[in-house]
Image (cartoon, rainbow, N blue to C red; front, side):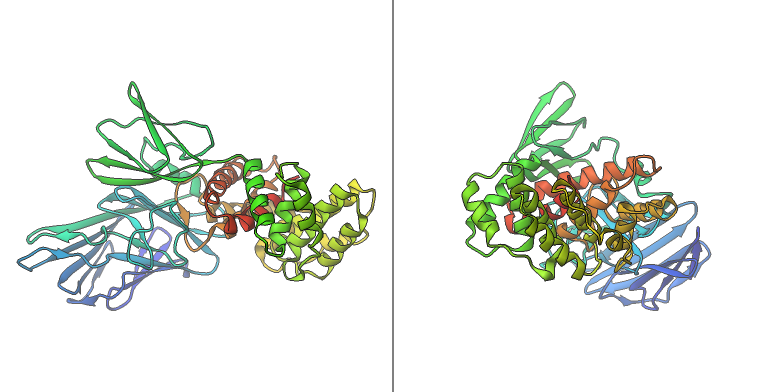
Length: 479
């Protein structure tokens, strides 16, 4: 075991598994996978070295420790002909209470490990040379933004199928450092990197000399003096940069207006011919309230057929409360309250209860059970945080917990959360929106929520079925 900063690093006897702990509490396990040791591990106070093989390829991992932790993964072979490198990768397994974020674009990248219940410290690994990317279950890179990260994503340190010539070696080098919060890691990204998730119609500007730009479908480039201006169609898009250190695959996106997404998804739900789900009913109800539905009569018939789903009481109550206000029917409001009384206090319960209370105010009805609803114990820490934010608002507990949510969503960093799909990410955005303006974390919470919301709206452009759940979560806290 090696002590570095406040962390303890330990390897399995074969060098395959690295465990990262802090003050004896495990943060994460990183598994190199399917390797065989060829020599005893060499460990001393400031260096760890492992000699391994994988097929015909010899692999050496070498860590040196000082102010930063410098990790090199090197591969070579003794064959007379080129050999395809086997996957050189880390599978990430975060311990309970810890989260990971990754931005792997090929020639640039980083990933972070952080606590889920406070701001920091954050352990950040930055690519200094070589390659960093996601790999999916089909052994092909899952480029950022071109689909959800795999449920248990693997970070790849060599391009898939890379042919290593005889007498040559492949080296990927990452540097680990410790930071007070995830947004401080932004300073480690390339100086030319601008926020890449924009609203529809916005133009992005990159200043990069001696770089070849290769736009993906739906992306357009314009040159103006030393700047490259970029715009594109709504949705998640790709822009490749060919530069001296390799190819960088950037996710760029343009988010359609919230009302445009609402109208599209509501039209999809009504025309689907399927019975209304709770999420779909909520989206259609909000679209009717916003008067953006193309066929109001069909949408009204669709909502009339919805009578709530106790299994998804949060969206059901929100849909019924919205309909109660639009139609002036108190029976809808009473049904929403009855669903919430029987529902577990999971994530979303506090926001649904708040919406139902506000609907009652609009109809001139008090809710005798309001205090009891907000006084319930949340099923998990995130649900408890939500209830505290709509009720008591204790800064002492709320600020650290919100900082943990920011860690889950990567602050203002580009990339994707490890093991968190778009629906789960959408469920967290509303928590950041509940942050009181006077709290010290409010600016960071707002910036993270805005970034995540733009990306999520862009992500559902061509995925309406998934979009209904994503949009329902994004709408839940909006009024």
